[in-house]
Image (tube, rainbow, N blue to C red):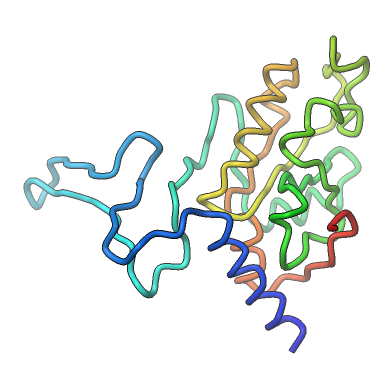
Length: 191
């Protein structure tokens, strides 16, 4: 029963944290495109997304590799990272978007506070000048394929000097994690 309540809460948080669109309204496939036309073996194909009653994920679909050097990972890699002393798994969602819990063993560093907290990821120094050469490998996640919080955190980290090859992106996020029935825990930082 508790798991059903958590999934329902996560489902509505994903809907709430994305744009709620009217049925039939055109959604972004990528940040730049709503309609993609290309030639295929079938001839000219037009690909587009429309809001409908069964759609679970609204908003813009994020790329698997949001920036050069970042490695995409799935659930098995996240589980391995949770068990490794060389990795830190980070929930980049803000407390208001952390409905339905978080991945056990992960830490919460909201995307909009990432630069101030790079010391938690093994960087030394301060906001003015971070040294991240000896930083941990970091797996970042947020709500799912439409969530922009992790990509924003990655961009800020790299701009502050964090090596992009030490960043791993779990794009499936909490939507994929809970849909697979994996354990969640209540987020201790939630208000």
